[in-house]
Amino acid sequence: MDISEIQTIEHDVLVVGAGGAGIRAAIECAKQGLNTGMISKSLLGKAHTVMAEGGVAAALGNVDKRDNWKIHFRDTMRGGKFLNQWRMAELHARQAPDRVRELEEWGAVFDRTKDGLISQRNFGGHRYPRLAHVGDRTGLEMIRTLQDFCVHQGIATHMECTALDLFLDNGRVAGLVAYWRETGRFVIFKAKAVIFATGGGGKAWRITSNSWEYSGDGLAMAYRAGAELIDLEFTQFHPTGMVWPPSVRGVLVTEGVRGDGGILLNNKNERFMFKYIPKKFAPETADTEEEASRWLEGKEGARRPPELLTRDEVARSIKKEVEDGRGSPHGGVFLDIASKRSPEFIRKKLPSMYHQFKELAELDITKEPMEVGPTMHYFMGGIRVNSDTQETSVPGLFACGECAGGMHGANRLGGNSLSDLLVFGKLAGEGAGKYIKKLQGTPKLDAGQVNAIIRRATDILNRESGTNPFVVQEDLQDMMQKYVGIIRTADELKKGLEELKRLYQDAGKVKAHASPQYNPGWNAAIDLPNLLITSEAVTRAALTREESRGGHTRADFYFESDEWLKYNVVIRKAKDGNMEVEKVRRDDPPEELKKIAYASLEELEGTKGG
Image (tube, rainbow, N blue to C red; front, side, top):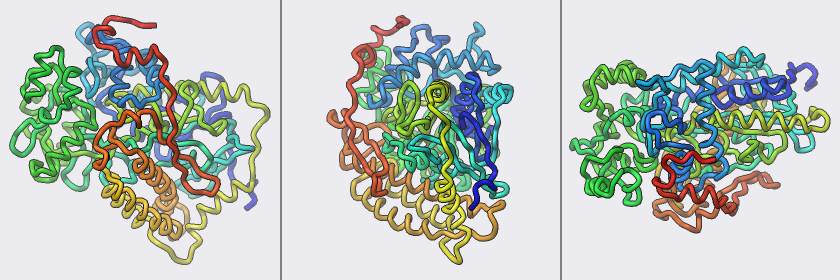
């Protein structure tokens, strides 16, 4: 194909993904005077940032003056089971308050305390009320604010445009090939740097809160280009997704319901979470030894409810109740806020949840408990990046938000995703700007690479016959749900890898009928290789890590291992084209950060820190 006939657009920086991380990165690039473009697989504003309903975590100290960045850092490290990249967790905790205040300056309208400060609520794993919120629509307000600010910065936005693959010039990024979903026509983006903000790959599972866009595109494109992936065994199953009716199974039920007083009940009307409090967490979740012992004895009275333990703990507890026959009629448990809060409070503080259940389940949460269960929600792991610049091992390729790994370790605390995308979106934009300033010469376009990318996409349309891409995707989702779920074993993971071999073969033979215009079958077929690479990476990483930690639970290694704490699981593409898995030894933490992470609260409360 003569690539001179293909539409070509040039930018200094191309941001792939238009959620909170992508928009924040694009804003930072534009601030530096860079010609910035942003592509979105769907429409601008249709991002999973909107699903983050509970709030954005930042140690503002507005509700409890004892809070500060050190305690936020400590909570994040402990929530991540100390597997977080220490520097990333430090940058996040230090910079989150400024990013939230900046968002307020740009027009975000947060809920207020009586003193007029930004209000903050309790959330799982956070010691103090830390989540700045807008009812249960915080992510929506963030996206609205970022978009409004973004459109005045001269950033070119290309919507309904799907990225296919990067092309390189002597190993460094030179641009990206994409196609317009409406017409099926290809487009070449020439760029000196590319920032991936593509989210995770939750659509590899059957029950997920993720939308159709989340097919691991950034992870797979980075992998094919030679970047490394890290921590992909850690997949977060949010404890509370809708379980009924079947058409909405997996739709998120915000942790804000529990943060505002909701409790979890089994079919015997027992508040079962008291049974599952790990002994090591009891002192962390109470103010006194007496409160801690009440927790462990299953009595109420501690300041923070057991429903606000970390998400991995709550999800496993719900799964156990259901397996032991104490679940709700449709395979979940009950989440009750109606008996704890007034209808007026619920409608004011949780308006989205009220309407969601009213419209989708014909249930009034001010009168009846909800049925909820675990749903695949978030990738803690992702593309391996430099903590300060967000650059990958491929020169000119940067990543931020959910598609970047390292910040959350083995388990993400609720609310940390929104502050993560603000902090690291900004840092990715700064990193790309510094890279471009130092760049020698303009990267050249390689026609051979571009043609190969286009040929892979058009082969799907040109086959005489083939398998149905939707059937292959459903088989993959069933396999991942069955073998790579909340609790894993070596035997099941090995079966999963065997199934993946067959699925790769099936995906290589898929056929989409008709033309590329408005062709959902072709779109699904193009997503398949990315879903398969993402699924294989998660499965191989899960098989490699022989311990249980955070979002990764192995029934055959049901303990945390001090030895495994020394390692990250890193994945890269080998020279023979196969997936290579390596245990990479972690650097020793800086002594000052180690002291903070292991300090008592008394040592940190009231300290401002440098």
